[in-house]
Each structure stands twice: as C-alpha cells, then as structure tokens.
Image 1 (cartoon, rainbow, N blue to C red):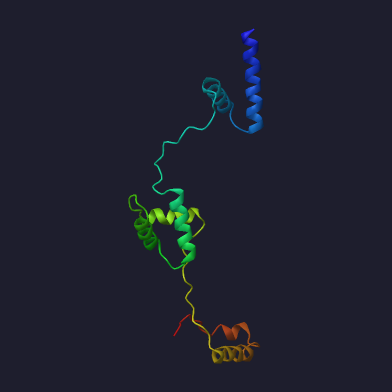
Image 2 (cartoon, rainbow, N blue to C red):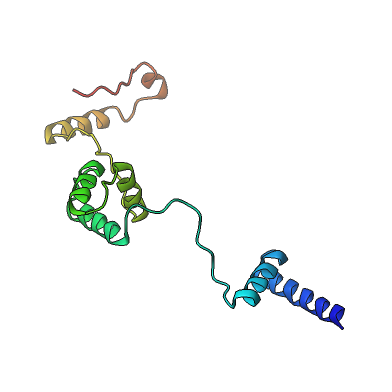
Length: 146
C-alpha cells in the first residue's frame, strides 16, 4: 500500500512541477520542508547585509530628486551626516540611486547657433542644391568648432 501512495505522491509532484514549470525536486523539497516545519517560507540568504536601511534609501532618492545637481559623493556625505550608523560610500549611494531608477546624465555640449549663422547656412545650402556628386567630391568637410 505504501508503494501505491509513493507513486501517487510522485505523480502529483510531477504534475505540480509541470504546471509551475519547475523541476520536480523543487516541489519535493518544498513539500518535505512544509511537512517537517509546517512552513515553506524561503530561507534567509547568506549574502552580505545591506548597509543602508529602507529609510536611508528613501532619503537618498528624495534628496536626489529635489536637488538634481548633487553628486553621489555629496549625497553620501549628507547621508553619513544624517545617519547615526557608519558612513556610506559613494559607490553604495550610486547603487541605491540606480535601484531607484536615477542615473547620472552627461551634459550635452553644443554651440548655440546665432540667427546670422543660420541664415548664412541656409543661403549656402540653397546656392549649392543643384551641385552634382562630382562637384561635392572636391569639398572637404570638417567638424571644427570655433
């Protein structure tokens, strides 16, 4: 009779595993753990504990959104001054900002075009619109800003 119960148990485990798209051993391990402890919650990970609390993370995101020009180093020093625990590195602050969806932006460097320069470019382009590719082959284009 025990063998029949084992086959039924194996069949149910396989069916559940197939339904959840996981390996049968995962369902078996969870079921065994539940029968032993009456609890199938996930065990705590063995990784390093976070140095920042959720309150610290909220504080960082709030400060970064209010003052968009603050660097990660400045935010780290503000957080270390505000918190009673150990100081936070700017790498940690940068990671927490990334987790919150905030990333550093590089300023775009461009020269504003004066109205006179725009008119001159338009005049030049209209004057050369009938040129052939052979005529354009003798022109050297450069990207030099003054």
